[in-house]
Image 1 (tube, rainbow, N blue to C red):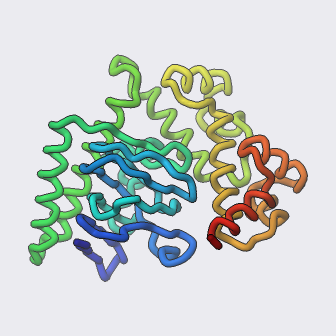
Image 2 (tube, rainbow, N blue to C red):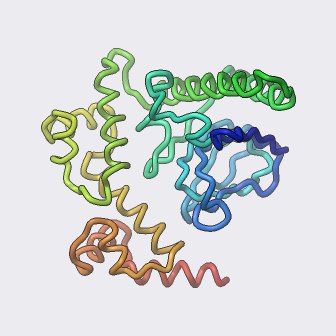
Length: 285
């Protein structure tokens, strides 16, 4: 089942998938014009999810969030319940004061897998049932009702994720918001700015303060987050485009091909050319 609402005046789109075989997303081909955020719930057995060419375990009774620039497919898509929306329907950046999820819930480097209690699963089931009812109710307030439901879903998923990933409720929210802002700034600037000091300056913090804060939340170091984001983009460009290594080098803010190649090999264990060759050979199998 695939349910879809499209706003003709804004281009906003909201989708719900349930028992839909073949549900996936291929950013560089069939889905290149559809920039959807995805919330996927696996109420069934543990399965494999492939994100940007890498396989991950998607355990039973967990939830996964994915950014609009990520390609993915599920081993058993028919057992997944998923919501998708674009920023024209609901912009999480413009409405961060409402949902407080920017820079945390959706990430290009760390795939947030949230474990669900029995109570959380029951609540998600109830929410999905109400979504389906509203999708099938065509009236003058349908868009408004579905938008309210989406906000409720995002807020609820964010609270579930925070309870699993934030180490202590006693820590002030301001510290957590700094981490979110850092992640958002990296997403916006990683192609041109590779130093922690640049982002620390924007946040009016010292690089050391940032590092201590990320350690407090059991996060990767700020430097590692920047490097991981660059590597993710490099892998995508090598695997899904025909851009030359030289072109990718400059696109990702490096001035020297050899330096970029060494950086990529240090972080992946293989050179850019070997990574691309391996990807091509695997596609041909």
